[in-house]
Amino acid sequence: MNKLIFSLLGLMVCTLSLNAQIEPSKAFKKAKKAYSTYLYDSANNEASLTEAKDMMGIAMESEEVKADFMAWELQTQICNSLIQADFGKYQAGLIENMSSEADDCAALAMESALEAKALALKKFQKSAMESLWSETGNAASSMYSYYITRDDYPGAFPHAYSLIVIQDELVELGGTYFQVEQDFEDQMFAAAFCGNRAAAPETKSLYERLIEMGSENAAVYSDYFAILIAEGDEAAALEVLDNAKKRFPDKKEILYAEINYFLQTNRYEELVDKLKLAIEQEPENKSLYSTLGLVYEQIYKSKLAANEGKEDDNTLMMFENAAKYFTLATEKDPLFTDAIYGLGALYYNKAAQISEVMRGLGTSKEDFELYDKLKIEMDGLFDQSLPYFKEVESIDANDRNTLIALKEIFAKSGDLEMSTEFKNRLNVVDGGGQNESSYFKN
Image 1 (cartoon, one colour):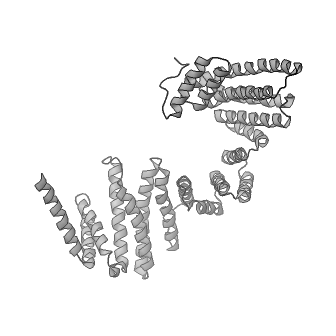
Image 2 (spheres, rainbow, N blue to C red; image 1 turned 45 degrees about the horizontal axis):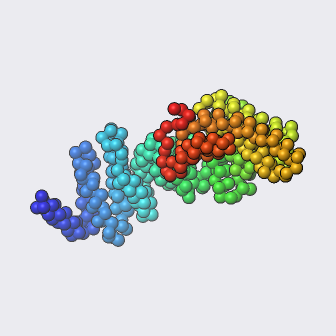
Image 3 (tube, rainbow, N blue to C red; image 1 turned 90 degrees about the vertical axis):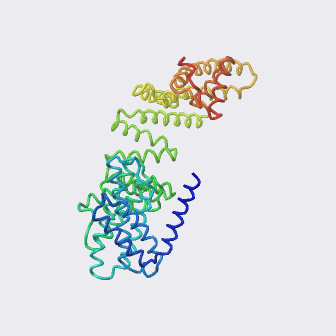
């Protein structure tokens, strides 16, 4: 066994030594020959393609070779061929994943094509660049397809962006990669979409370019609005949103962008009409009903605080509306835990608010009478909230907020055994574990 290992090591050292002895100019010739061999019979000469790439690695150590247009052209062609060979195997099901070398080849192909462009001074060289860019576009398209079918948007972005660069380069040469302008716009949006999820610095300029092109895709404007908000440029973002609302009055992307902005800035009263409009457009969207329930709850809390904790018809209406929309959400989906929990929290939080009022009472006869009255109301609200939290726990035994609520409700009702049960279950979740089964589902 050791003899075999030493033999293999000796062969490796010998190979490395031979490569080190090859002059870059000769390596360039070997690369051309190996690549020609591969092109002659690619099915049976795959090793020649790898040899061509290796030889180009040696050849490019020479400044003289690097000053030759044909060297960069050849390196681009070799990289593109390696990508397409790998992609062909993937499509045929011969390999489960494309190799990491394919990504390296894609980056090297783009770099090499740009170097070739810088050296393309003669007419025939510029003509050759058209073909070279098209081939590189095909390779980039293969890489993009590979990643996008796997929903790997960060992985897809470099290749989607390369296609935009390639189109620009070909247009400069009087040609085109995308024969239909709309196809190019769609690809640019795809690049922007992937770049947005990859947090790529080029993303913003892609959206700006799409807007300059007059894109009819409403998502372009909503995405760009979100980018500007994230950057803190609220004035520019709102200008984009206002223009988009005029241009796309019926597009839900713009409406949702506005809703998300109002949510982030706590503009709850303005959200009511926006969410009702969204519900009209998507009446089966359970999340919209639940979100409107949350909005009404926030308005209720705000009005209650402004009224020094005293309820009136207006605050009660907000509370009832919150309960109404949470309930509508559960009617759309009886297992929708966000809305079920929302109902439980609505009654629980109102009970907790009454508890705070009780703590601030004095010791007069009137205060004692009020205390007793408020306690009955508080206990009733805790009792109202309990079935909702039980239901959430039966669906998701590891929802932390639900476990906290159950622990607290049972403690307040004096059921220390049940409170301890849910304290222990909460400790499991807080310790990074999972409760194996639901208490209330058993």
